Length: 157
Image (cartoon, rainbow, N blue to C red):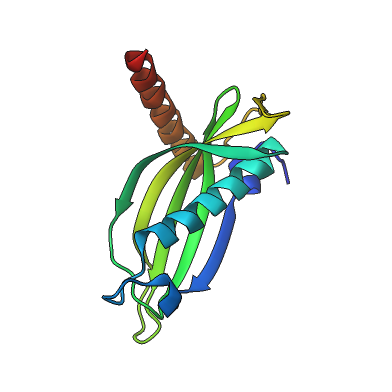
């Protein structure tokens, strides 16, 4: 498998939400889910960069659906775009209620900007070559997000 395509760097994990993950209302804490998303984003970016990455930014973190104790959560990270030293990772959290049959539903989404580091300094990453139609669409979305972030950062300067 080619390391420079989106499918190589994809990362996924599943876990059951337990009482330790919840608030007093029986819903899973947003922070628990964000931590899981950050881990998956890091794994996704590290696979492509072949090295250590750190989280530089989280954009458009959207909570679409609450998650209850006992639900199975699947967290998926997909590389969507790479710059010179940074990587855009789209992370999706799906929820599957075990007590009743249901198709997995999107519960959270976010874009993570990860930066590749060598010797504690930003370091170049390999280019990304989308191959399928879906990968090209994801790449275009990631490139758009990358440009939006760059524009926001230049306005702050």
